[in-house]
Image 1 (cartoon, one colour):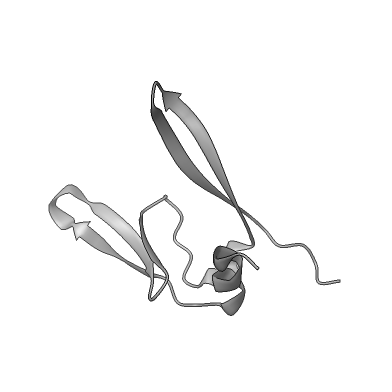
Image 2 (tube, rainbow, N blue to C red):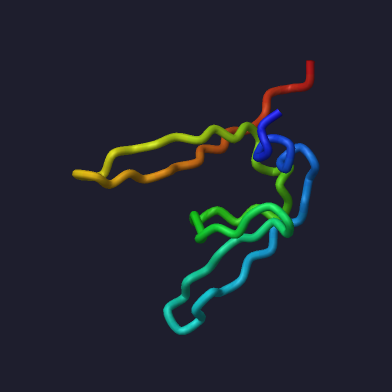
Length: 77
């Protein structure tokens, strides 16, 4: 199982804080896993993320944007 999926399934706490309060730069952090810039969503636990899918997008010559998409998990089978 992918590390992101395993973290989401565990329902870990997500801490949101400012990396630079004067410029309102926020981040979300799952302790022991990752700290990422705010993506405008504010889940409190990783279990709220549903299905996590990574993606890439070319944004210009020699530049690439890494994106993460989250969708609600389907009903349990």
